Length: 392
Image (tube, rainbow, N blue to C red; front, side):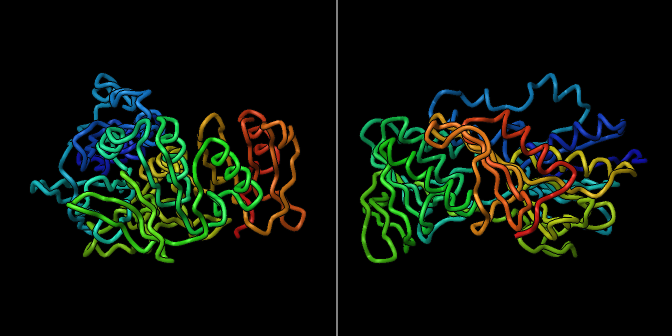
C-alpha cells in the first residue's frame, strides 16, 4: 500500500490524468502530485488537429475535466514546471523551479516532442502541432486563399491537411509514401484515403522526401523537395513524427530506447512506471512496442495504477487507433501489414461505408472500419478478442 509520500505523476496529460483517476478508482486514498510542463490543466490532444484547428471548438472545450473534478480527485496539480531529472533509486523527481518531490511510486507520462526540420525555428509561418498553443498559432494562418504545405503523410499530417482544406486553404500534402498513411493502413486503404483527399481538393505530392524549408526575411516561403523542386507556401506544417520525451531522464539509470523501457506491467524499475506515448513496454504477444494513441494512454494508466497498488496483470491490449478526416472516420484494430490480404466483410467500398479484415496465413490480424464504427468494433471483438494479432 502506498503511504504518505504517495505517487508523483510526471506529465499533466491524458495519460497522467487517467493515472490519477485509475488510482482513485482502485482505492488509493493517499497523496498524488501531478507535475506538468505546460501551463494548462489536462486537455485532449486529438481535437487539436481537428475541432480546435478548424475553429469549431474554443480551447476550453478541449479540457478533459473542469476545475471542480480536478479538485475532487484530491491530487495536487503543478503546472508550468517541467521535470528535469529523476533519481530512480530515491524515487525523487526534480523540477525546473527547484522542487524535489519524493514519492513511493513515480509514473512517467511525458508524451512526445515533435521533430522539426533544420532552420525551422528561425522561420515565421513554419509550424508543428503538438500543444494547444501550436494549434491556435496555426489556426491564425488558415482560411480561404492561404497556401499551406503539410510535410508528413502519417496520421497527424493527413488530419491537418484535411482540416486546413476545410477552412478554404489551398493545401499540398508532401511525404515519402506512395499514399497517405500507408504504414498505418496498408496499401489498399491508403489508396482510398488518397482518393478522398484528392476529391476534396488537396494536392498530393507523395513519394518524395523533403530536404528543407525556404524562407525570405525570416518568413517561410516554401518547401524544398529532395529532387530540388520548391513548393511555394505561405504556411508550412511539419508533421514528420515525434520522439518520446525522455531527455530529462538522462542520468536516472533507467533504460530508454525510443521510449522509457518497461516490463509487461509497464514498470521501468522498482517503483517507476510509464504510460502513454512515452512508454515502450514488453507486450507478451507483440514484443517490445510503443503505441501513440489516446486510447492506449487511458488503458495503460489503469494497468500501471494496478501495478502500483500491488495487483495487476501483464498489459497486452489489441492495438487501436482512429482518425477523422473530412466526413470519414477510420478505425483500426490490430496491426495491418502491407503483405496482408484485405477483404471487405461488411458494406461496400463503392458505397463509402465498409468493414475490412486483414489476414495473414488465414488469421485475422487487423480490422478496419470506414464510416462504420459500431460494426468495426463488433467485428474486431469477435475476431481479435482475448488475443493480440501476429507481430509484423
